[in-house]
Image (tube, rainbow, N blue to C red; front, side, top):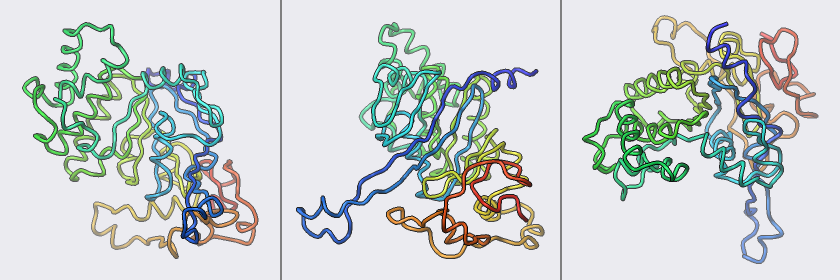
Length: 345
């Protein structure tokens, strides 16, 4: 058994069970402040998700904008409140229902770090780069000597492609790609076990995207990291992930090994997403057929009954309107899919 296979066979680092994140919103009919409480509606940003992430594994989280990917990532580290469900970090519950265990949350935040989507907005413009990258060490390891902190910051900056001359500069003096490298250095300087990458390349040029993706892949191998990689770009997710979870309107549509999901998608939504990914070969691009979804994305304030994807699904049947299909393995399907007709061609 290889080292990577050994790491991924261990007990889960992170276990999420039936996690839901709902936000209250005022109905459009509530024109006056005293009418707000009578016209509250719920946005089900995340609705009953379950998955595990094991040591050394990269789980890709994909879906259209507004499907709840970033909300899920932020809920895991406590940046948004959880409505129901549980989150376990290394066998200990950090969240159960709407309550949090502050001691276990502190442990999770020390061992799980985030790389944010907007590289410039995630850096404090009033702080030097040295202070920004050192912040996790100063917060979670206050007993560390100043010289050791400085040495670790310098080493990590060099590892992400920057150097010691950048320590005293400020974020506005760097390009978007350099700012994202600083954000990666900040996330890794405290030697976390899990890194949550919340669309880390979506705000960058294509050539810079490739550099950042390659950097993350190298760092994952060198540091034996687990990752939750959030993106709407399936080509990027394919390049880094070992398993893929596909979301739509807060629910899981398909979940399985990366190769199985990309080579033989079981859910019609996954098939439609993959058909939108351009080919590098112009001849193949012209010959292939695309799956065009009908209609617009439904409002999360009023999702469809039964299967939330049925209003745009080319395979929808009467049963889809009556009940939401469970996420399970079905005959002919290569991965878990929440579809009554999973695996059909």
